[in-house]
Image 1: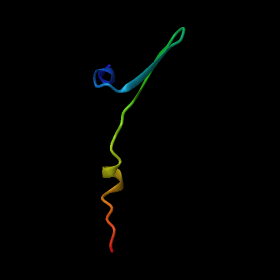
Image 2 (image 1 turned 180 degrees about the horizontal axis):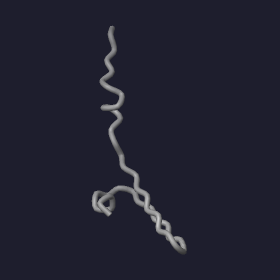
Image 3 (image 1 turned 90 degrees about the horizontal axis):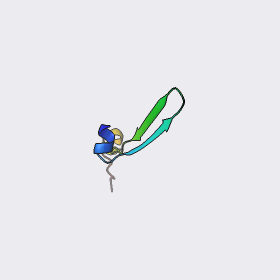
Image 4 (image 1 turned 120 degrees about the vertical axis):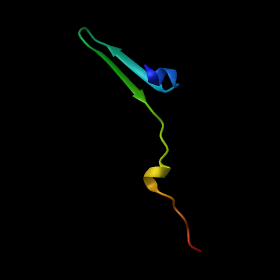
Length: 40
């Protein structure tokens, strides 16, 4: 439920015997890609 408090997208499915919750979290790709510089 912390994702809901932070304003993230959340979807829930209720089946007969199960409940499924999923959330999406935006992250920055910059730390994964590293800094890119162009040499002129």
